[in-house]
Amino acid sequence: IHGRGTFVTPRKTIDQSLTESLIAFSEDLLLQGIQFETHVLQQAVVQPETRIASLLGLAPTEDVFFLERVRRVAESPLSYLKNYVTHKHSRGIERVDFAHHRLFETLEGIYNLPLAWGHRTFQAQVADEALSQFLAIDVGAPVLYMNQITYLRDDKPIEVSDVWFRGDRLGL
Image (tube, rainbow, N blue to C red; front, side):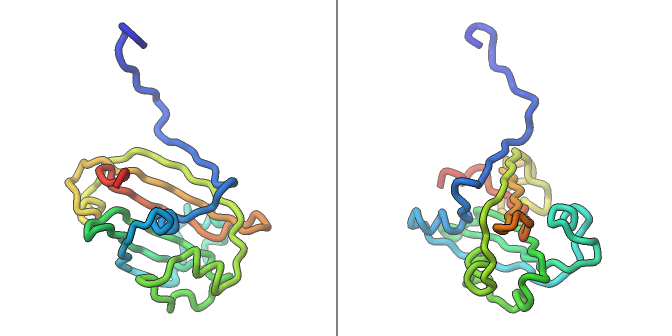
């Protein structure tokens, strides 16, 4: 407000609907002609934590495929990703080389899963010790956190992503 200063709203997250365009961040980079590398830190079939099981509509004992990666652009970390996929629809996915294959491309192309829509929530955060190491930034540096839930045509959730982007590299 002119003459009164700048005010910060209490809202901490921004929601984004993906109903118009379901596009993975890696696909967006490719469309922009930006080359990237993916470093896989971990991939395994695991039992999900309660939050993930709930978001995927699974019983706590049902398995998920867990994929942990760092995506690099111009040899510098850009994002740190944790993905969880309902395993009963993707048996054998743990053997895919995700350093060279993209997750959504694999789900659609190999497993014939009709990814239809999703929902993203964004939140500004600061890097903790672990994030600072994954993203090669200082503890306390700004990061953009994104939670994404991806759904099939039957409106059942198939994948949950937790992604952190370096705040200083978002505009590339």
